[in-house]
Image 1 (cartoon, rainbow, N blue to C red):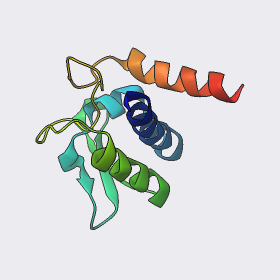
Image 2: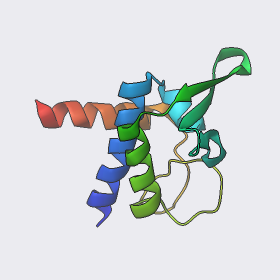
Image 3: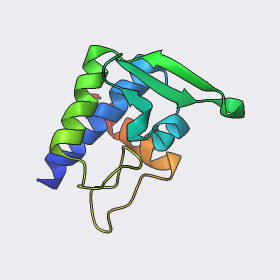
Length: 109
């Protein structure tokens, strides 16, 4: 079960990285309030804390929604992405995002 949940989370992360060109730090700082589902946009704070609104592609939005629905721990508000094993806590190190990418690259050879 944990492996499936990790796959759903990692797919959402990979699509956000690939389709929107987000950085690991952007992934770590994403909050539920950063997504405007009605407008299909995502807010990111870049350097100088300047907020930028990006269009949320359908595949990336669907992946995030699947993660929120199927795999994200039941935590109210806060960051989007969490560690999925105990103790449950938000992703806080960019090395975790790098590990997600490294693992995906290794899987595809």
